[in-house]
Length: 119
Image (cartoon, rainbow, N blue to C red; front, side, top):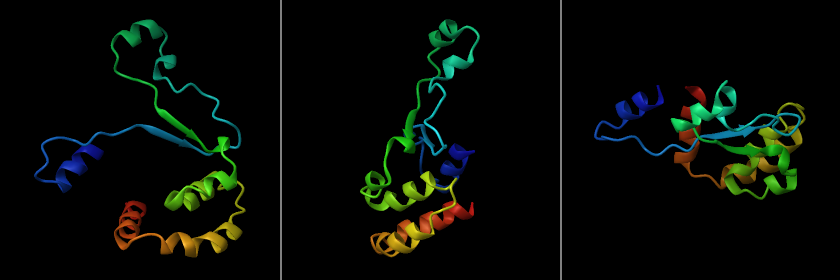
């Protein structure tokens, strides 16, 4: 679906852009699973021979304190809210950091984000 949508929106494109598979995790504990799809196969050795899959990049938000996440520029508010979303206790974060966060963004970033959320 993503490649079809990209090519439809970019009519002059003949190729797809490079896509880096990343898993952004915000569970209550550190990420407990393997990042290798091969671990899902009964015969992992044979599956590896085909080299169809590789490890994905894992950004486990549990490895970062709130203070560390808040140093990440335009991603800071999103990362922090995402990390703490299961607690439901982020009103203070929004009130404290949203104005600064929003003022650092240009209108194209905000409109792209709104389109992404609405899709």
